[in-house]
Image (cartoon, rainbow, N blue to C red; front, side, top):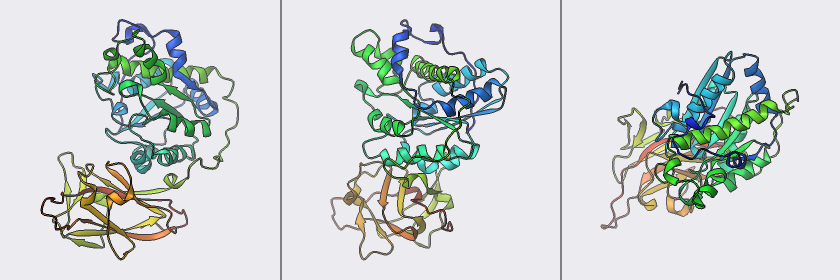
Length: 386
């Protein structure tokens, strides 16, 4: 989705707060410059007036939640700074933010929603949506972007939830492994709030979503890193195309995501393809005895539901025609919309079957299942896609 907007970022008037950010706060936001070569090259191109595409991927904060308009969200403000700083640059922006999603879903859909537009710089914002299990997926998203032929720059942005929490520690380890520039809204703002020098409500509207002032602060932290890269002597350095060995794995760097409309079941007992009010497709279960089966390629498979299951015992699956079905609760994964059903299989073609639990317990009724799509992970590039 392309979004355009214009506003200026950098002055105290840009913040809807009576307490403008100090130079000390801004400096604290600059968590790590990493290797600025990629970012410096993008900025040098913009300075020369070459066309640039900015990419943003994240959750509801990136989508612009609680901002009074797209131009006042952090992504819109970064784009406005770019236009003001480089008026001869023809700027395009891709906003791939999707509310309520983390880096695993981001890694699955990055090819379609972000990388298809060949961004030159990507800001990743998932620190308030991920949890301790997502290091592998977050790394896969980073590797997908860095591996693009146009060698885009990647910048990590760490926002925060209530009481200064986030998953920055997990994501910063990945960022350090790939020498990425990183900025932290949490490190900059939370100490001031905790000490009573800034008000939470000036920068955060609820428990996690920024106000206009919070979005403006996040944009200022990002553009401050851009200014550092613009002044760095790294624009003339060559960029090493080869990525380092994975910190966790590269399974989520090689994915085959198919939404429900692109899924063709080889067996279907009672399910139907349905579109919701936003025209989002889903395969919907039709009864407690129904099941549906798909083919996929890779060494693992992820299923994406429209909503987190109310009870993980209500949804069963089996891989490659196993002798019995298993409920989702055996996976030991958090209750959310995405589940890794299998991994570490032999790379190749496999099958997955999904079913409502037909448990005869009269006190528990299996819920209706809405499957938004499935993704093979650990795709071998030599395999023919289904």
